[in-house]
Amino acid sequence: MNTRNGTDLGSGSVGKLLFSLALPTITSQIVNMLYNLVDRVYIGHMQPVETVGKLALTGVGVCLPIIMVISAFAALLAMGGAPRASIEEGRGNSGEAERIMGNCFAMLVIVSLVLTVVFRVFARPMLMTFGASENTIGYALEYMQIYALGTAFVEITLGMNAFITAQGFTTVSMKTVLIGAILNTILDPIFIFGLDLGVRGAALATILSQAVSMVWVLRFLLGKNTKWRLRRELLRPKAKVVLPCLALGMSPFIMQSTESLIAVCFNASLYRYGGDIAVGAMTVLTSIMQFAMMPLQGLTQGAQPIVSYNYGARNAQRVRAAFRCLLRACVTYSLLLWALVQLFPRMFILMFNSSPELVEYASWALRIYMAATGIFGVQIACQQTFVALGNAKTSLFLAVLRKIILLIPLIYILPHFFADKAFAVFLAEPVADVLAVLTTATMFAFQFKRSMAELEKQPEL
Image (cartoon, rainbow, N blue to C red):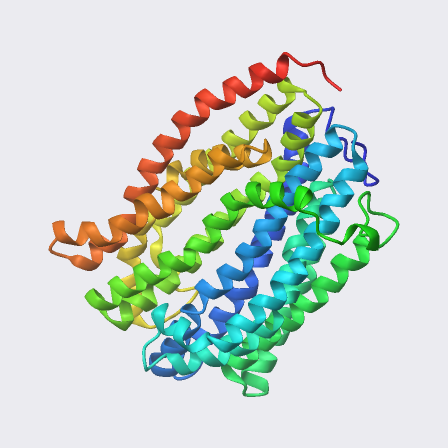
């Protein structure tokens, strides 16, 4: 596929191609995370830090599960639809790729409307379930009631940007998030401190920035430079188009949406064993983990068009080369991240709060929570390659395994075996990671080999 920006997914050096696609997507992932991180950095430094700043940070932190659900629904359609569109493009079916994109756009709009109503109406009980206390619910509600109004902006921006990346226009998709993040960074201090809107100002800055990003995405997909164009006649959802996308998208959907369920489990257990400071520490740890994982997600998104396109074109050798390159990059990064966290935990914590008590508590907790980060590159490289190949069943099982089968039970089981109950709760994360990586690597070794053997029996297109 020779896109209009010169990217050829079917020839040339796989390594150079991967990093040319991954660099903008990594930048996009990191910058996209800045929407929420910038909010928390400013909110955590609201004066006085020991009271307002700390409580407001915790309050906004318990909104994270809802924010993750909103992003998860975008992933359900985008990460299910974009690989399928790339595979069809590899088969030479550009029209079908365009139809998939149009159907996914329509579903994103429908989902956005439903989620907006749900989160506006049920915000308070949901936030209390996610770990808000009487001390923090006011801040959480102020943030969430405004953020929910921008659900459509978030869904369409994240969802349709994936289709821009899938075509090879990674520089365009990077600009999507750069525009919004820069605007958010400018508006946050103005709204939070200048206009004295506090956490409401942070939420308002975020949704306005996402709205601008959405306009940018739609303008591109309706313009003359895109390969797949949004067309009115392709917007009516059809089951035979949407259902396969939903099936493939269930893996990334579960990976993101279960963050909400996991947050409930973590926050409830930590509040029981450590109080507000433990929940506040978990907010910081989650923020660090999400930010640190962005390059891994960017790498897999950069590899997805290469793997999917060449799988559709029946080029097994190129699919293998793309996976090997992705695996090396992911493992190298995850090992480097692990070393930095273990050596300099306070450096990461101070990005979000300067309260001595919280910094001290979160520093030791971060070392435990991210103890198995060094091998996580194997997990994400294998799991996301299953998605890129259109293997819905295996990718779904692996997503359920790590989060639901392993992590959630461990959060409640491990405290029975340790005197320090809070320590045991944080320990659940690395234990689940080790077990998940071993399972994923074993399954991938067998299934990937079989898939490539079957592909080689067919002639290249």
